[in-house]
Amino acid sequence: MSISRIKKGDEVVAIAGVAAGKTGKVIRVDLDKHRAYVEGLNVRRGTIKRSEKNPRGGLVDREAGIALSNLMPFDPVAKKGVRVSMVMDGDKRVRKSKASSHIFD
Picture (cartoon, rainbow, N blue to C red):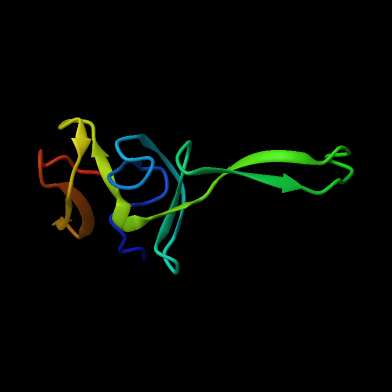
């Protein structure tokens, strides 16, 4: 069970770095490295080798990881990045916005 405040599929806002202030959807989270890969943020260009699938090879844009400490969940009610607290909803543990009491899970 993941105890991260940011999960795959969440809408997040970057609070530091080059992408500060931009929002995007989380593609995946790497808890071992404390990084998240966000659609459209921290995009890097890489090369791909020639293959049957890509006979010419070439350049591709890929999202690089962003430290989890530089991201905040985006609250649609408060319309900003918010801190979250873990609360019990019956027998289930959920993430709740501290700004507007919006439940994320």
